[in-house]
Length: 239
Image (tube, rainbow, N blue to C red; front, side):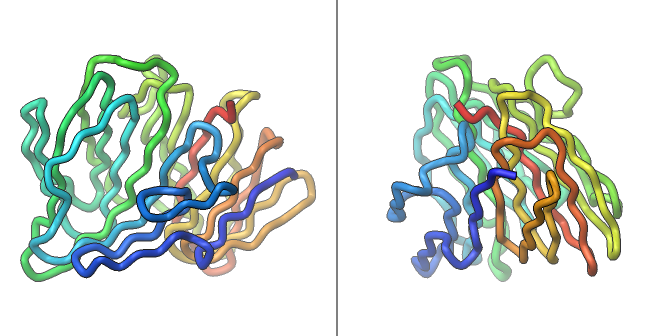
């Protein structure tokens, strides 16, 4: 198994008071030439926004943006006319394409907002901007749920890339199998909570909460846990 380990303690970390953020890949004030991306997966940020605070209106172009709240509600507004909340159990996708502006604020004046923001480089530039959002809910133990995929696939949300995002929950003493979708893709696994062991071709790697691993050369992996874990799998082109 040829892989790249992304330990949680090596992520870029900044606390701006209103925002505490961890970056798996180079982003904003964090730059590490060895941590620029995993193929077309460009950003995986773990954000915590203080009550009443948020990201003011700002632009994006030519990026597929996925937001997954884990606590609280994201209040979203954009130049396409969308103004709505994104709560725990929801997943949001935006294709920035030719250009959009948007803002994201914590919908609470008392509690922190926590969410993952993921950017995937599209296979086609300058597409028409679009927005979508679905309710996924809780992931049942020992299941992997397809959330995002290409436009011609069966996922509830789609992006302009031959990439897939699944959310999984392996229960105590459980094991799940994941099979790569495209031969040219890599498999990125991020543990959102709990601990798990990733294994392929007889090689295993233990991961703690917020650790990640990028697997470059395997068609199938297993995800096992002694005490249980939730995770995100991103199946993404490497070139």
